Image (cartoon, rainbow, N blue to C red; front, side, top):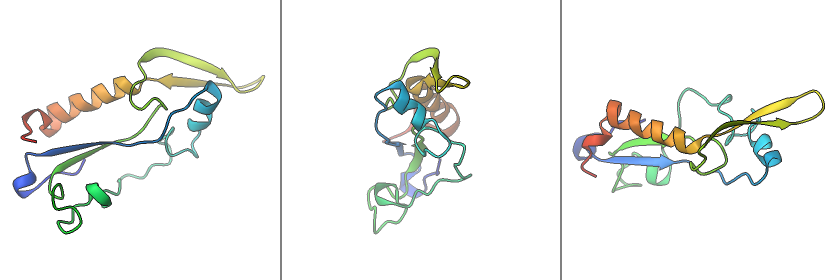
Length: 127
């Protein structure tokens, strides 16, 4: 989350990170590996880089939204924030290893919006 300033302090931009869909349990398993930037957060840094295109806080590059509150919601389960299955799927990788797969993107989105409303003022946004 990056707080807004000036006349953008009551305006919000919620960015849903893209990442494509997984289309089989095998492709979902591959996305869940620590080397995948769209299926695992294990290698994420402490901070996200927001200075690109319409996330940029430079008024010259982004005159409309440079000073808005910005939340970047990280992509998670290969369902474009629509996964709503609370069942954990055990994907059998080989005879000795099973990887647990989760399809809860919609629940993650709902919880993130609740946090943005309750802790970051999205519920009082003007735009």
